Length: 218
Image (tube, rainbow, N blue to C red; front, side):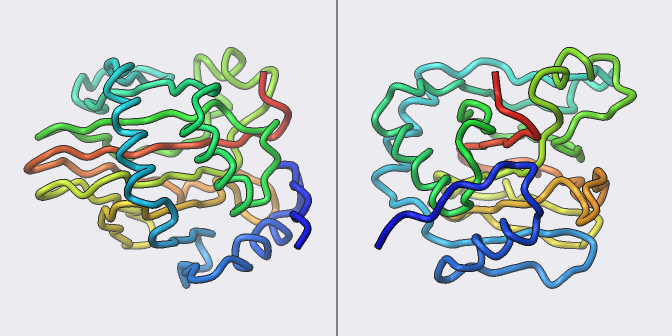
């Protein structure tokens, strides 16, 4: 069967939603406030393990775009993954096939590591238009549209992702995908996408994140 065409991030959200729902086993959050999907076993365990190794090789303290004075706001580590790596390319291929979003609109794939006590307090993934660094981060490719996140392992305790506005808590599972539209159906930014990477209480948590933009990245 021929591959389906990619959709630009500026494509009407209905087409992207339909593409995501065409995948087997996808669950859509039953809420009018937020367009969010979950798919279990999106990545096989062996691919997750390989990506974890690559995150550990390049991880550094995570940062935020606009400092808010809270040193404990985001305490994880981040790793920029090599786009030439075969395992990274396979993850990118799977995300593209699942969402239909055009790879040219995607930021490079990132990995995050959360140790005991580390977290990312409530935040949205898009950049606030009145933020100090909005022009720096969005002048070329525009704002973030879709987020795709995949858990690579299961910590011993804690590490869930909480979407406060819709009272939804998603527990980590190896290979589980969570993706959402950072905008409403009319294209406006959606504050109901606020979410929290809850503290890891025991063990360690690894995830990968792929963000898509309004225009071509770079």
